[in-house]
Length: 274
Image 1 (spheres, one colour):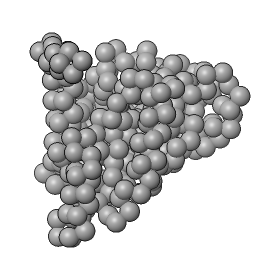
Image 2: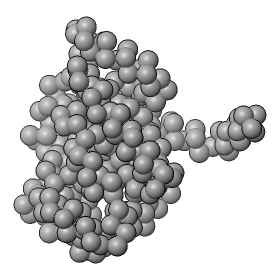
Image 3: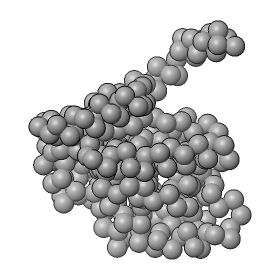
Image 4: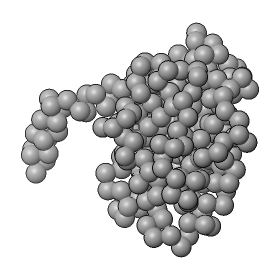
């Protein structure tokens, strides 16, 4: 069964969509069957892999509001053989209002995506920069969440609120939701401030922080204008190498977590704690 990972942070401009696109592309490049779900009305993840949102017939909106089958919304990308897309559309802006009176409105995305889990190794959800109903749907559907954090002064602003939201989701809607990791983005080695943010985040959150840090990189900024991930724009750039390393880190973490040896160690640790 594939792993569903939401990429979420209610703070804008932290590299959330960039991370969702390039992580999904890197997993696909490593030959893992990957589905990128664009759950942001801005549809930047859709255009970022080569599709014009204006030409989309069935999107996440039709899937969640109108009950269209998720399989009928999936588009095969021509850029990477193992990468598919569930696109978004500007109509998704109105979805929260239209869904407000629907029964089990927080579980619409879960109902749509869980049947697809056997078809993919990874499903990556790009969330909108808010903690609204669509993001709640994504966190309810996901097995885990990646939280991108910008290496700048306001890095920790709002992070506590998001972590609190995750706890609420765990308590009420999705008790198995885990934090996959906190991803430090837009790192500039030349800036003392960037290094201070890295130290502070690692001090507070320790093992929750990914080893991989995403640097500021011109190629990362350029690739969306070509409608391709950075790995296809410049495979040797620092941005491309960083996202490949992140993909490998996630694969290793999940493969290790799935082995019988790891499960036995976890059971033994739980018995000792008891």
